[in-house]
Structure formats: structure tokens, C-alpha cells
Image 1 (cartoon, helix red, strand yellow):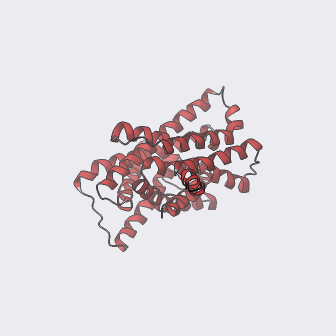
Image 2: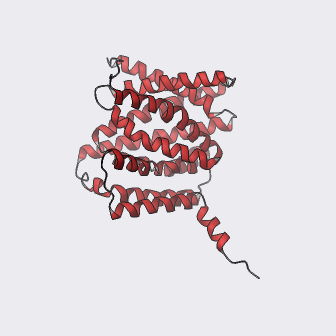
Image 3: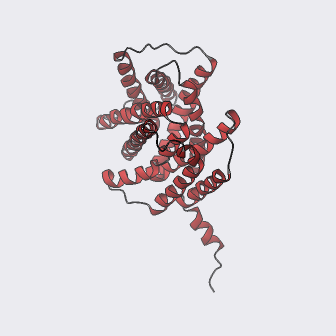
Length: 300
């Protein structure tokens, strides 16, 4: 089950980078994000009714829901949308791939979780692999102060993502299912974005193009309803440290999509990076140790 949830999360979220890029343009980012989560929240509440699951969370959960809505379904996406307007999406993906390390550190600092050496080692391997994949893009922006600002905004978004992970883990420890908590948190995030957009004077008109509307539908249904539920179920089943390691794989899927739609060309260094990411996965999930134990000859 964990592998299925992991694959769904990686495949869907790895392709949302292209969809987000297609939304950048005439519609302000807060408006696009608000529409995305209004649609996703309404769909999730409808599914909750169909499945006859309880809608109202306990009183103790509301503070966590409000914080998750602000961090995970508002600030997180605002940071990434604006970061992608400044720097290439590949560089943003590099920053986002630090999520497993941030989850390990924040889990230790704020929740007293023990650090998992295999998860940290796997994340570091994967991060080195991602740097190899995007080293040419990074080299072209080392002296660009605007690019560093974009990377800083992306890092702030990753911090918000990590905070949302820990909040979801806390609510799941209270016995709440991510499907229910996501519904309310998305609704809260959409409401915050809507109020902020109206105060900023933004219009809630959508771009009437097939590409924009198709991207909105994909991000709302697949990127939000399906992928967020699968990912936060992983957080509850595996812990935020190991669950967040799938963020290291997102750029790999994004590169595959870019190869098909944008003509991305693979280099030898990019192939090395891909191999490091795969090795990081094996280490993070302890699969290297299991393979070694199975192949070790039995002592007589």
C-alpha cells in the first residue's frame, strides 16, 4: 500500500510543475490558487458525504486545521508560484527537494521525533543527485541577486510545506483521517487567498484558454484531491521524514515531462544525478540493507 501511495504522489506531483507553469500569466497567482482549492475542497466534501464519513472535526483540531490551511494550502503555493516567476522551475525543485531534511529537523525540534539516519542519508544522496541534474541551470544564476531572492522565497515555501506535514501528522495521531482534515484545511486556505485577493483588488476572472482551464482541472482534482490525500496518508503511515523523500523524485518526473513537451536534453551529469536519486530512495526505505541481508550467505 505504501508503494502505491508513494507512486501516485510522485507521478502526479511530478507533473504538476508543468501545470503550474501553464497557469502563470494573466491571472494573478493568488486567484489561480484560490480557484484550485475552492474546487478541490468542494469535491472532497462531496466525497465525504458520499462515503458517509463524519464532516465535523473535534474542537481540539481546529487550531491545527487553521495552521495547516495557512501553511500548506496558502503560503506554500504562493511562494512557489512567485518563485517560478523569478527563477527556472528546476531551481525551485532543487530547493523543494530539501523537504525530507526539514521534516527530520523540524520533527526533532517541535515534536521530539528521533532522527532517522537512513532517511537523512537517503535525502542527502537524492539532494546531491538533484543538484547534478540542475547544475548547469544553477551555474547560470550564481551572481544573480534576483535569482537568489527567488530561491529564498522557494525555501520559505518548503518550510511552510514541512510545517503542514507536521500538522497533518499531529492530527492523524489524534485519529483524524487526512481526507477530512484536507477538506477543511483546503477550504480555510482558499478562504484566506480569496480575502487577500479581494483586498489586493484582484479580479476573480479566469483565463478562457484550454491550456489554463485544463491545468486548473488537473491541479484541483489530481494535484490536490488525489495526490495530497495519498501523500498525507503516507505521512501518517511512514512519518513525515520518509514520506517527504518523494519530493526528491518530483524533479525527475518533471524532467521526463519537460523532455516530452519542452525538448529537455539529458547530459551525462544528469544521468549520474538520476542514479543518485534512485540510490537515495533505496537507502531511505532501507531497501539496500534488505537486499544486502538477503544476498549475504548464511553462516554455518
